[in-house]
Image: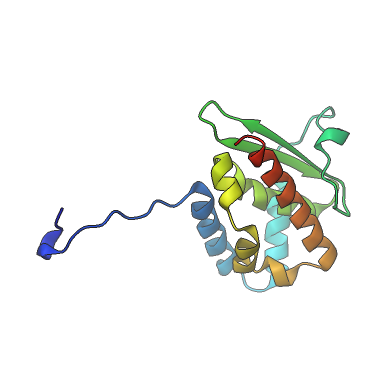
Length: 153
């Protein structure tokens, strides 16, 4: 197939829902000035999370390796994509959960397993902005999401 001007047209690679959401988050973060503004924004994202039920605040849904209390629930849709919901007892951590849910929800298990979360956090500036303890907790949440996705492959 030739494009106008006689050049061969090549298909444009499709981006995953995760990549598209990462692009959107990166644009939102770039509009904010310093990390104080970004922290406030992340906390605001956390306030948008739907609360988990009392039953969902169970030991089975608890994420190990976080200094704060964190619970993650996943559901698989009829189309094979996964949706995640979560909660925490800490405002900033709830915001980090909201960031993860935006990235991962609506993606297939294979897309989740293939996603390079550390590179995404570097792109968003989270890597250098979080304390070591928060970074470890964020890593524990990603590991849990990946493990849940890999169990669906």
